[in-house]
Image 1: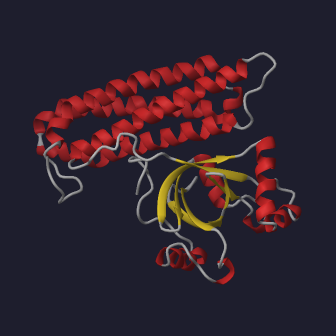
Image 2: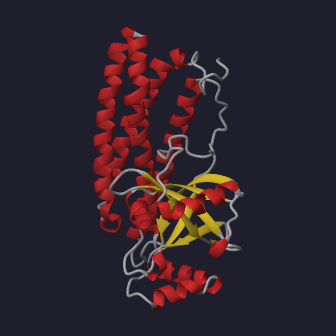
Image 3: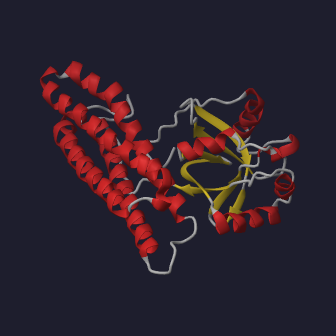
Length: 311
């Protein structure tokens, strides 16, 4: 899978019995399915459960808006949002399968006038969604799937040191993007007489939460697998590993505080929000540098993937 090397979605997501046959047919036939979906635009969206934390895959119709993919939380006109929509609000980082292509994306619900524009665009191409909206009092959401760019550095991965650096590069890049987007958003919000671009607050929220989601998964994986393995193999590393674990706790606390601020980014205090980002940036930058200095020489001799070439 291309894109984010810290993606918390695994290779065996949960699939409901209702969707299982559609998903299996989709994957067996390069994204083509028959029956009621034949000839339509269909993708598979894998999300992380808002309550369960389990991976869930849903087959969904989609409409293109330029280079972007749009999915509609219609639930067949049900009075309630579908489960996948609640999932992307809580955990915006998703996996998308279109045809034979698999990539990662950040799910961003459109808001206000932008939602109305996109919904009209969807109905123009797929009129059935208009019927769904007419049959419910719920304002059916339109979700934009913002594709996560492929690995920025194009780093070749031959060993575990390379893999760790790939992940660290991605985290640094995403943190820089989050800071730049937040600065632009708050600057626009503070312009006298001029509101920020429609929907940008939700975009900032979703992208920032996706970064937090990836960071939490990365540290949880290290604490559960890599660090215990190094501890057993290199007892002299105990002080280093102890410091790394303590720093994970600190960074995770800042992450939770940042997520609380994101609960309503439209009214978030710019000074406090930036202060939290600055604090996380300083803590994370120092942590990544110390981890690289301490572990890269050891990990360079460990093939990745297992059984692959070693440095």
